[in-house]
Amino acid sequence: MTKVALLPVVSTSDEAARSLCGENGAERVYYPMISDVFLSTVDGKTDYSVIPIENTIEGSVNLHMDWLLHEVDLPIQAEWIYPSRQQLIGHKAELAGEDGSPDYSRIVRVLSHPVAMAQCHTFLRAHLQHAEWEHVSSTAEAVKIVSENPGRGWAAIGLTLAAGHYGLDVLRPGVTDHDNNYTRFLLVGKEPFTLRESPVRKTSILVTLPEDFPGALHQVLSAFAWRRINLARIESRPTKKRLGTYHFVIDIEMALDTVLLPAALQEIEAIGCQVRVLGSYPSFGSTAPELTGTSESE
Ligand SMILES: O=C(O)C(=O)Cc1ccccc1
Image (spheres, rainbow, N blue to C red):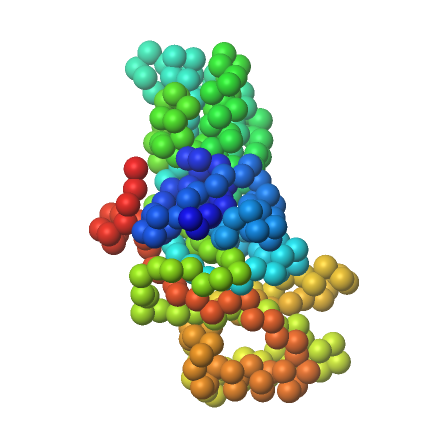
Protein backbone atom coordinates (compact mmCIF):
# COMPACT_ATOMS: atom_id res chain seq x y z
CA MET A 1 0.00 0.00 0.00
CA THR A 2 1.20 3.52 -0.76
CA LYS A 3 2.66 5.19 2.33
CA VAL A 4 2.50 8.94 2.90
CA ALA A 5 4.68 10.61 5.56
CA LEU A 6 3.41 13.66 7.44
CA LEU A 7 3.45 15.58 10.72
CA PRO A 8 1.62 13.91 13.67
CA VAL A 9 -1.93 12.63 13.89
CA VAL A 10 -4.50 15.44 14.30
CA SER A 11 -2.04 18.08 13.03
CA THR A 12 -3.12 20.52 10.31
CA SER A 13 -1.09 18.42 7.84
CA ASP A 14 -3.07 15.35 8.91
CA GLU A 15 -6.41 17.05 8.26
CA ALA A 16 -5.17 18.39 4.92
CA ALA A 17 -3.73 14.98 3.91
CA ARG A 18 -7.02 13.20 4.64
CA SER A 19 -8.74 15.59 2.26
CA LEU A 20 -6.41 14.75 -0.64
CA CYS A 21 -4.81 11.35 -0.04
CA GLY A 22 -7.99 9.91 1.49
CA GLU A 23 -9.22 9.75 -2.06
CA ASN A 24 -6.73 7.04 -3.07
CA GLY A 25 -6.61 5.15 0.22
CA ALA A 26 -2.93 5.79 1.04
CA GLU A 27 -1.65 4.85 4.49
CA ARG A 28 -0.58 7.83 6.62
CA VAL A 29 2.68 7.45 8.56
CA TYR A 30 3.30 10.12 11.21
CA TYR A 31 6.63 11.72 12.16
CA PRO A 32 7.34 14.35 14.83
CA MET A 33 9.37 16.79 12.72
CA ILE A 34 9.35 17.94 9.11
CA SER A 35 12.95 16.71 8.64
CA ASP A 36 11.83 13.18 9.66
CA VAL A 37 8.96 13.45 7.20
CA PHE A 38 11.25 14.32 4.28
CA LEU A 39 13.93 11.77 5.23
CA SER A 40 11.48 8.87 5.51
CA THR A 41 10.65 9.37 1.82
CA VAL A 42 14.32 9.82 0.88
CA ASP A 43 15.14 6.54 2.69
CA GLY A 44 12.26 4.69 1.01
CA LYS A 45 10.35 4.02 4.27
CA THR A 46 7.49 6.00 2.75
CA ASP A 47 6.57 6.82 -0.85
CA TYR A 48 5.54 10.46 -0.41
CA SER A 49 5.81 13.38 2.05
CA VAL A 50 3.12 15.94 2.79
CA ILE A 51 4.74 19.37 3.20
CA PRO A 52 2.98 22.60 4.27
CA ILE A 53 4.84 25.11 2.10
CA GLU A 54 3.02 28.43 2.06
CA ASN A 55 0.37 30.19 4.06
CA THR A 56 -1.85 33.17 3.20
CA ILE A 57 -0.76 35.02 6.32
CA GLU A 58 2.76 33.80 6.99
CA GLY A 59 3.98 33.44 3.37
CA SER A 60 6.47 30.68 2.58
CA VAL A 61 7.41 28.29 5.35
CA ASN A 62 11.14 28.90 4.94
CA LEU A 63 12.36 25.84 6.84
CA HIS A 64 10.24 23.53 4.68
CA MET A 65 11.14 25.34 1.46
CA ASP A 66 14.85 25.13 2.25
CA TRP A 67 14.62 21.39 2.93
CA LEU A 68 12.92 20.96 -0.43
CA LEU A 69 15.60 23.00 -2.23
CA HIS A 70 18.80 22.09 -0.39
CA GLU A 71 18.48 18.88 1.59
CA VAL A 72 16.49 16.51 -0.61
CA ASP A 73 15.81 15.79 -4.26
CA LEU A 74 12.15 14.79 -4.22
CA PRO A 75 9.99 15.96 -7.14
CA ILE A 76 6.70 17.72 -6.42
CA GLN A 77 3.83 15.39 -7.46
CA ALA A 78 0.79 17.48 -6.44
CA GLU A 79 -0.24 20.66 -4.69
CA TRP A 80 -3.45 21.53 -2.93
CA ILE A 81 -4.85 24.25 -0.72
CA TYR A 82 -6.41 23.64 2.67
CA PRO A 83 -7.97 26.13 5.10
CA SER A 84 -6.79 26.02 8.71
CA ARG A 85 -8.90 27.21 11.60
CA GLN A 86 -6.85 27.25 14.75
CA GLN A 87 -8.41 27.25 18.22
CA LEU A 88 -7.13 28.08 21.69
CA ILE A 89 -7.09 24.75 23.53
CA GLY A 90 -6.59 23.80 27.18
CA HIS A 91 -8.24 22.34 30.30
CA LYS A 92 -11.48 24.28 30.73
CA ALA A 93 -11.75 23.51 34.45
CA GLU A 94 -8.35 25.12 34.96
CA LEU A 95 -8.37 28.03 32.50
CA ALA A 96 -11.97 29.26 32.20
CA GLY A 97 -13.89 31.68 34.39
CA GLU A 98 -17.35 30.99 35.85
CA ASP A 99 -19.14 31.94 32.62
CA GLY A 100 -17.05 29.36 30.72
CA SER A 101 -15.02 31.90 28.72
CA PRO A 102 -11.24 31.68 28.98
CA ASP A 103 -9.58 33.57 31.81
CA TYR A 104 -6.48 34.65 29.91
CA SER A 105 -4.73 35.84 33.06
CA ARG A 106 -4.47 32.20 34.20
CA ILE A 107 -2.54 31.20 31.07
CA VAL A 108 1.21 31.43 31.60
CA ARG A 109 2.45 29.57 28.52
CA VAL A 110 1.06 29.02 25.04
CA LEU A 111 2.52 26.45 22.67
CA SER A 112 2.12 25.86 18.94
CA HIS A 113 3.83 25.35 15.59
CA PRO A 114 5.47 28.60 14.38
CA VAL A 115 3.13 28.83 11.36
CA ALA A 116 0.01 28.50 13.51
CA MET A 117 1.40 30.98 16.02
CA ALA A 118 2.09 33.52 13.28
CA GLN A 119 -1.50 33.07 12.05
CA CYS A 120 -2.79 34.09 15.49
CA HIS A 121 -0.35 36.91 16.22
CA THR A 122 -2.97 39.66 16.72
CA PHE A 123 -5.00 37.47 19.06
CA LEU A 124 -1.89 36.51 21.05
CA ARG A 125 -0.76 40.13 21.36
CA ALA A 126 -4.23 41.24 22.47
CA HIS A 127 -4.87 38.55 25.11
CA LEU A 128 -1.73 36.61 25.89
CA GLN A 129 1.11 39.08 25.77
CA HIS A 130 1.95 38.26 29.39
CA ALA A 131 2.37 34.55 28.62
CA GLU A 132 5.45 32.75 27.33
CA TRP A 133 5.03 31.74 23.65
CA GLU A 134 6.78 28.52 22.76
CA HIS A 135 7.31 27.00 19.32
CA VAL A 136 7.05 23.23 18.99
CA SER A 137 7.25 20.91 15.96
CA SER A 138 3.48 20.71 15.25
CA THR A 139 0.14 21.98 16.55
CA ALA A 140 -0.72 18.37 17.47
CA GLU A 141 2.45 18.11 19.57
CA ALA A 142 1.49 21.38 21.34
CA VAL A 143 -1.95 20.00 22.27
CA LYS A 144 -0.39 16.71 23.43
CA ILE A 145 2.10 18.52 25.69
CA VAL A 146 -0.68 20.62 27.24
CA SER A 147 -2.78 17.49 27.86
CA GLU A 148 0.17 15.92 29.68
CA ASN A 149 0.72 18.98 31.89
CA PRO A 150 -2.53 19.81 33.67
CA GLY A 151 -2.58 22.41 36.45
CA ARG A 152 0.30 24.50 35.06
CA GLY A 153 -1.60 27.21 33.16
CA TRP A 154 -0.52 25.95 29.72
CA ALA A 155 -2.59 26.30 26.55
CA ALA A 156 -2.07 25.33 22.91
CA ILE A 157 -3.11 26.60 19.51
CA GLY A 158 -4.33 23.73 17.34
CA LEU A 159 -7.28 22.00 15.71
CA THR A 160 -10.59 20.99 17.30
CA LEU A 161 -9.71 17.48 16.09
CA ALA A 162 -6.60 17.58 18.33
CA ALA A 163 -8.53 18.88 21.37
CA GLY A 164 -10.94 15.93 21.05
CA HIS A 165 -8.13 13.44 20.48
CA TYR A 166 -6.24 14.51 23.63
CA GLY A 167 -9.31 15.07 25.84
CA LEU A 168 -8.96 18.86 26.06
CA ASP A 169 -11.40 21.72 25.54
CA VAL A 170 -11.59 24.43 22.93
CA LEU A 171 -11.28 27.51 25.17
CA ARG A 172 -11.82 29.92 22.34
CA PRO A 173 -12.61 28.93 18.73
CA GLY A 174 -11.28 30.69 15.65
CA VAL A 175 -8.27 32.58 17.00
CA THR A 176 -6.65 33.00 13.57
CA ASP A 177 -6.34 36.68 12.66
CA HIS A 178 -8.03 36.40 9.23
CA ASP A 179 -10.79 34.16 7.90
CA ASN A 180 -9.02 33.56 4.58
CA ASN A 181 -6.36 31.47 6.25
CA TYR A 182 -5.25 28.90 3.72
CA THR A 183 -2.14 26.75 3.50
CA ARG A 184 -0.67 25.35 0.32
CA PHE A 185 0.53 21.78 0.72
CA LEU A 186 2.91 19.84 -1.52
CA LEU A 187 3.06 16.11 -2.03
CA VAL A 188 6.66 15.17 -2.87
CA GLY A 189 8.01 11.77 -3.87
CA LYS A 190 9.90 9.91 -6.55
CA GLU A 191 6.92 8.57 -8.54
CA PRO A 192 3.75 10.26 -9.85
CA PHE A 193 0.82 9.97 -7.42
CA THR A 194 -2.47 8.51 -8.66
CA LEU A 195 -5.20 11.09 -8.16
CA ARG A 196 -8.28 12.29 -9.95
CA GLU A 197 -7.60 14.61 -12.89
CA SER A 198 -7.12 18.31 -12.35
CA PRO A 199 -7.61 20.81 -15.17
CA VAL A 200 -4.73 22.88 -13.72
CA ARG A 201 -1.12 21.76 -13.99
CA LYS A 202 1.89 23.64 -12.78
CA THR A 203 5.64 23.34 -13.17
CA SER A 204 8.07 24.64 -10.54
CA ILE A 205 11.69 25.44 -11.31
CA LEU A 206 14.71 26.67 -9.38
CA VAL A 207 16.81 29.15 -11.35
CA THR A 208 20.35 30.15 -10.42
CA LEU A 209 21.48 33.28 -12.27
CA PRO A 210 24.99 33.68 -13.67
CA GLU A 211 26.94 36.10 -11.43
CA ASP A 212 28.37 38.34 -14.15
CA PHE A 213 25.27 38.98 -16.23
CA PRO A 214 23.48 42.25 -15.46
CA GLY A 215 19.79 42.01 -16.31
CA ALA A 216 19.74 38.18 -16.19
CA LEU A 217 16.52 38.07 -14.16
CA HIS A 218 14.87 40.38 -16.68
CA GLN A 219 15.88 37.97 -19.47
CA VAL A 220 14.53 35.00 -17.54
CA LEU A 221 11.17 36.69 -17.13
CA SER A 222 11.03 37.81 -20.73
CA ALA A 223 11.57 34.19 -21.93
CA PHE A 224 8.19 33.49 -20.33
CA ALA A 225 6.56 36.82 -21.15
CA TRP A 226 6.95 36.80 -24.94
CA ARG A 227 5.59 33.22 -25.06
CA ARG A 228 2.64 34.40 -22.96
CA ILE A 229 3.41 31.78 -20.29
CA ASN A 230 1.78 32.75 -17.02
CA LEU A 231 3.84 32.67 -13.82
CA ALA A 232 1.97 31.99 -10.58
CA ARG A 233 4.79 32.91 -8.19
CA ILE A 234 8.41 33.97 -8.03
CA GLU A 235 10.41 33.95 -4.85
CA SER A 236 14.06 34.47 -4.05
CA ARG A 237 15.77 32.18 -1.55
CA PRO A 238 19.36 32.53 -0.33
CA THR A 239 21.83 30.16 -2.01
CA LYS A 240 23.37 29.67 1.49
CA LYS A 241 26.81 30.02 -0.12
CA ARG A 242 27.41 33.79 0.14
CA LEU A 243 25.39 36.65 1.66
CA GLY A 244 23.41 38.45 -1.05
CA THR A 245 23.28 35.55 -3.56
CA TYR A 246 19.91 34.04 -4.39
CA HIS A 247 18.11 31.32 -6.29
CA PHE A 248 14.69 32.04 -7.73
CA VAL A 249 11.83 29.60 -7.29
CA ILE A 250 9.35 30.11 -10.12
CA ASP A 251 5.92 28.44 -10.31
CA ILE A 252 4.63 28.32 -13.89
CA GLU A 253 1.01 27.70 -14.83
CA MET A 254 1.80 25.12 -17.50
CA ALA A 255 2.74 21.42 -17.68
CA LEU A 256 6.30 20.57 -18.70
CA ASP A 257 5.14 18.31 -21.54
CA THR A 258 4.09 21.21 -23.76
CA VAL A 259 6.00 22.70 -26.68
CA LEU A 260 6.36 26.17 -25.22
CA LEU A 261 7.78 25.52 -21.77
CA PRO A 262 10.84 23.38 -22.65
CA ALA A 263 11.75 26.02 -25.26
CA ALA A 264 11.56 28.76 -22.61
CA LEU A 265 13.75 26.72 -20.24
CA GLN A 266 16.32 26.12 -23.00
CA GLU A 267 16.44 29.84 -23.68
CA ILE A 268 17.08 30.54 -19.99
CA GLU A 269 19.88 27.95 -19.89
CA ALA A 270 21.40 29.48 -23.01
CA ILE A 271 22.03 32.77 -21.18
CA GLY A 272 24.00 30.88 -18.53
CA CYS A 273 21.33 30.19 -15.88
CA GLN A 274 21.11 26.82 -14.13
CA VAL A 275 17.61 25.40 -14.17
CA ARG A 276 16.40 22.60 -11.89
CA VAL A 277 12.87 21.33 -12.45
CA LEU A 278 11.30 20.84 -9.01
CA GLY A 279 8.25 19.10 -10.45
CA SER A 280 5.41 19.26 -12.96
CA TYR A 281 2.20 18.35 -11.19
CA PRO A 282 -1.59 18.70 -10.89
CA SER A 283 -2.81 21.59 -8.78
CA PHE A 284 -6.01 21.25 -6.76
CA GLY A 285 -7.61 24.42 -5.49
CA SER A 286 -9.18 23.95 -2.10
CA THR A 287 -9.83 20.34 -1.12
CA ALA A 288 -11.78 21.43 1.96
CA PRO A 289 -15.00 19.40 2.16
CA GLU A 290 -17.24 22.43 2.50
CA LEU A 291 -15.70 24.01 -0.57
CA THR A 292 -15.64 21.03 -2.94
CA GLY A 293 -18.20 18.75 -1.34
CA THR A 294 -16.22 15.71 -2.55
CA SER A 295 -13.48 14.96 -0.02
CA GLU A 296 -13.51 12.82 3.07
CA SER A 297 -12.95 14.38 6.51
CA GLU A 298 -13.49 13.55 10.20
O1 LIG B 1 1.65 21.94 13.07
C1 LIG B 1 0.80 21.47 12.29
O2 LIG B 1 -0.33 21.10 12.64
C2 LIG B 1 1.15 21.40 10.86
O3 LIG B 1 0.70 20.55 10.16
C3 LIG B 1 1.96 22.56 10.32
C4 LIG B 1 1.00 23.66 10.02
C5 LIG B 1 0.60 24.55 10.99
C6 LIG B 1 -0.32 25.56 10.66
C7 LIG B 1 -0.83 25.64 9.38
C8 LIG B 1 -0.43 24.73 8.43
C9 LIG B 1 0.48 23.73 8.73
